[in-house]
Amino acid sequence: MAVAVAGLLAASALAYPGESPRPRPASPRSVLTAAPAASGDLLTGGPLVAVTPSTFWSTDLKTNNSSGIWTDPHVGAFLNQTPFDWSRYGTWTEECNISSDIQYGPNGSQRIPCAYNLTAFKLWCLSRSPRCHVIMPLPGENNNSREDASIAKFIVKTLGFQPDYFSVGNEPDLWKHYGIPWANWSYLDHRRPTPLAYAIDLRNAIGAVRAVDPSARFVGIEATCSCDSYQIGQVLHVDGPNISAVAYHSYPYRSTVTPTLQKFLDPLVGAGNVTSTYQHVRAAVNRQCPSCSGLPVFLNEFNAGPGWTPSVFNGTYANALFLAASSIQALRANVSQFTIFSLQSNQTSFGYSMMNGTSSVGPTGLLFSRLIDHLAMGSVYATHIVTNVPSVWSVLTENSSKASLFVVNANLTRTVHLHLSPLILNGTTGDVYTWDPGNASPKVVHGKIAGSYDVPPEGMLLVLVSPKAIHGPSPHPAATIAVNPVPAVDREPRSPTGNGPPRAALPPFARTARMEDP
Image (spheres, rainbow, N blue to C red):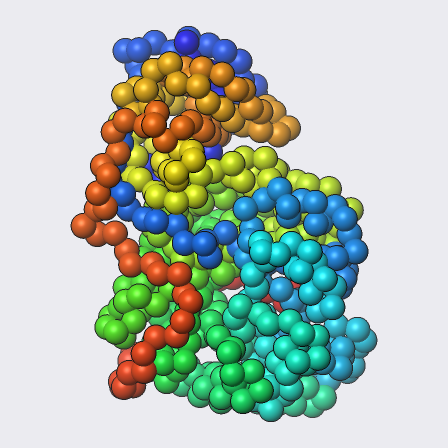
């Protein structure tokens, strides 16, 4: 028997370009149906390509009010149902002196309070221990290491909270007030740091912060996009011995804020997808700093683009489908940290967020709280689906207690007739989660796993079984498995090298939103 399901996550070896726009199916299949064996798409095992680090799942903790992370019980309840043990916290952090709770406007005016509340965050984080790890941004645009040290001292000494990492500034190539004191900011400012200037700014901030917090660790840069490889290189040259990771952001798109559904999904394939951008940044790190091959690379803001404003499909089921396939790509690429932007909007619409301003959970929130949270974390195997259906993604993950197969069919018109045998042994008992546009949320069935399943257009499938039921993946890592250590300590010092070529212009698909956007 074949079950029509909604396949989710998974980067299949067959990643074809998207098809031309076609009418969306009026009524996706979501009932039991027979799949002819002759037309089946065969699932096979593959080599071990990654061991997912504990830092992997992360989100930008934006809430609809400054203390919502602690005062809104719906926010806490939602996060407890997700895999997000890591986060970036803070909104409009470039403009905020959090130790005095003053936020500055682009004209230097003062507003009280800041858009985020560290006391509330500390209370929430302690209540969630040990499942709470955070990257805490410090201001960078004003280029004042003394203020950074004062803020860090306030966080660590006064509040009594030690972040896992600090970062200094956000997307420095988009700054307008570089080196200007907050009170002197003007709408007419157009001052940006050069890549070298930012690297020196970071070096000064690290030294000042460690004078008051010797155990402080740092994410070297929160780069605007994967194309910021030269800026990342400058940080490695100047600050390499003193940083624990580097990060970039990505909001892939190939159209406008009103694309067709096909255009919205097209960036899952090609130069703008997670697989390509992560490989680009990793290669740039290794090329510009051969001794940095083990330095973690975080993808610390990610969602479907464009980055400056949500499209008509952000916050919909299509956005959940996009994030599902991208999550599969991130798992298979061995990304060190995968941060979903963001937690909550301050409006009734969802936009990039998993929750809206009234604390309702949207489709992307359901993806991570009702589906991906059940994914086994541990060894990642590169499964392969032999099919002529474009835009199908799959991954097998496994640990000592369970194994999970995640399949996402991002094709708009064609069903995948997926045969699980011989990868999953016949007669195995387990859980099958399915989701498609015809269902408001994922559905689960417990029982004997069928030999084949139909994954309908825009469908997701998650199969959970005992590790003993898996037959096929190679027990040995592939020769190309990436080195991805948990970033527990800083690397050994090394000598800085020379300057590189100027940074390339931002390609349209790579422009991103700032973490501080409202």
